[in-house]
Image 1 (cartoon, one colour):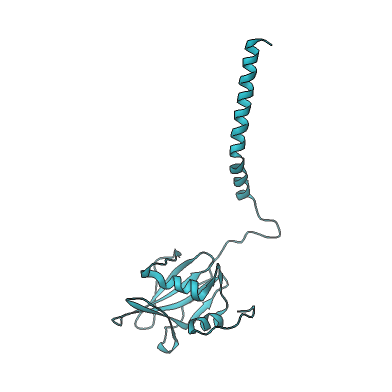
Image 2 (image 1 turned 120 degrees about the vertical axis):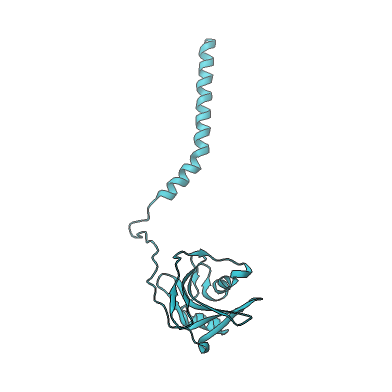
Length: 186
């Protein structure tokens, strides 16, 4: 074999090896991209999450409040009559935050267990009416001191992992400090 043919053959083999190595390096990326782009089987249609329509509850009354958390500066309670579990997987409730000085803030909110988020729907007025929130966003729950009430509701009362812990009677009993045995129908 001539010297020039041998060099040409070595270059061709080297290029083929380099091309193969590059292809091998990108194979997981290509496969991951293909996995992301696949569609669900025909018997499992892709369902987009949709939030159920908002219905504001009646103004809270003192006798229906269930205290669940106290920070250094305020205490938090839920109006048990406002508690609901929506078909969209959200838990909605009226939250009453009372400062150590006695000032009250009332809000109607929701927690979405699937995504560890909360949403503010409305603020309670002193005359018992509601003022709708201007924001329509879901926010990641924070475990910081200033916003720990949502984390407490998520972890201790409303959610089990990424699912709602149960139906309203079960959640109410949790807030009241009573636990019901699991019957499969929480």
